Length: 147
Image 1 (cartoon, rainbow, N blue to C red):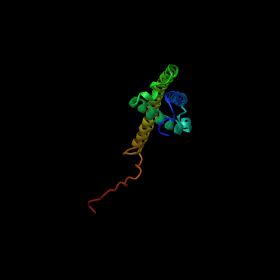
Image 2 (image 1 turned 90 degrees about the horizontal axis):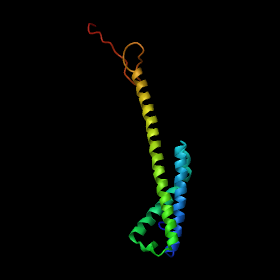
Image 3 (image 1 turned 90 degrees about the vertical axis):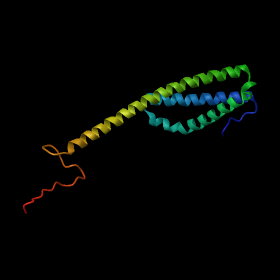
Image 4 (image 1 turned 45 degrees about the vertical axis):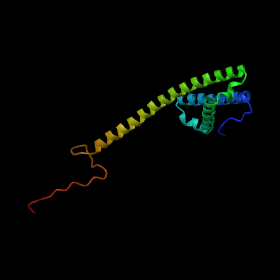
């Protein structure tokens, strides 16, 4: 399943339109889940999205190497493919923004947790009132040199 199964440019254009449309639907669904802070729900269709993206990438590369794969397709199909591709591009851009926002949010949470852990760790170490022995540290030993 590395390239689309098509016998002629028209079939290839139709198949590529279907592929692009389905991939766009999945990306838009994923984006909506990311924006609603439910990224784990997107895991359910990641396998399909990954497979379709691989086929899409390979097919587009093949068309770039051999433009005649689509050249003889009817103009109406080419126009439909251009529209599907434009919609796909827009969906990818929105997905990228959602992924960046989610990444920034996640990094902020991780940083806050790490800062709080460091702050708590600093409170338990040291000497003086209110300090406690740090976990795993050796006990203090007093040595009387006169003995």
